[in-house]
Image (cartoon, rainbow, N blue to C red; front, side, top):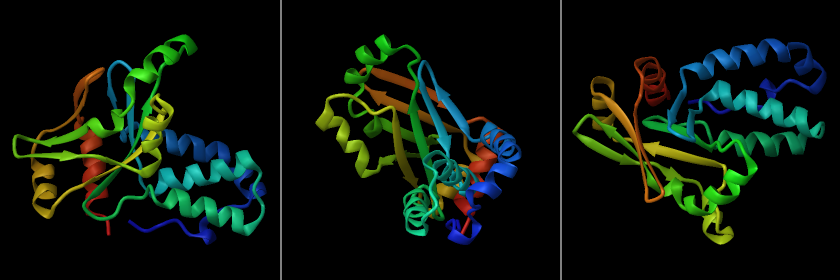
Length: 195
């Protein structure tokens, strides 16, 4: 999948003019790119559109104007765009109340190392978290956001198109499984095939 380039990024003024429309567009796009693993794990499958939007939102939030700062943001977020035969997942741990978070997050250290994709009964593929997730172990509590990649072989991609796909978390303190709905699976097949 093509990476986002500096030329595609709108300046603060131009982005503000189209932001309301872009927010609505991204809400629609993400509807078919989410899977929930009850009670509090939420996965979003990233693509070029979601990454472009995130870059624009970060530039807006930080009021970035310098080219080098904007390029640095682009470089960081471009890592989330999946390559061919790959899915890019942002895992959110959503615990609404502060007291609950304080109690639960220390128990979920390493949750990012326990995410698996089952392609029918044929393949189990382990999602791999980026380096930032290792900080969980240092700080003694799980981060609320993790970035992961799921890499498939050509054969696994072919089977992905035909088989039932389930996602499983096997962490000792949080186990869960969810089937990927057909509308989400259709989007992911496009991601896997994108050059």
